[in-house]
Length: 130
Ligand code: FES
Ligand code: FES
Image (spheres, rainbow, N blue to C red):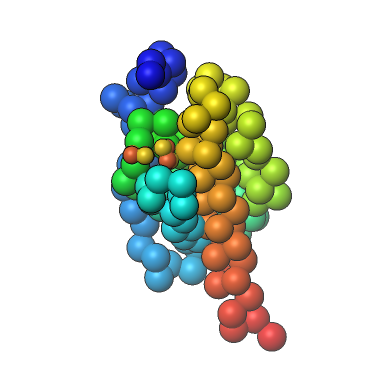
């Protein structure tokens, strides 16, 4: 199977690889696995007081398409509100990266990861708020 140029670019030069402190109240962490292949993606967001995603990082143990999907997503969510980030569809990622049908679930993993990260952040933000 051949990868698109965009996938190869993100795979060879992944953007925003790394981690934030999971305990930081401004950080939301999404950790998801793909049942189809067992690949694992961890995506983290750093959210400011205005509810805007200031920074994002990822670590993906998986295929090239999963790495490219998460790399692309960290670029896309920066500067977005949580609501905007939550509305990103896996189909937009798959289209941007020209993923073939067997690799669509890799982009689904990225959508699940950002949704999980947002949920984690929101749950943390509610803790301690009366
Ligand atoms: Fe092997 Fe994704 S199926 S890395
Ligand atoms: Fe399973 Fe890409 S995430 S093959």
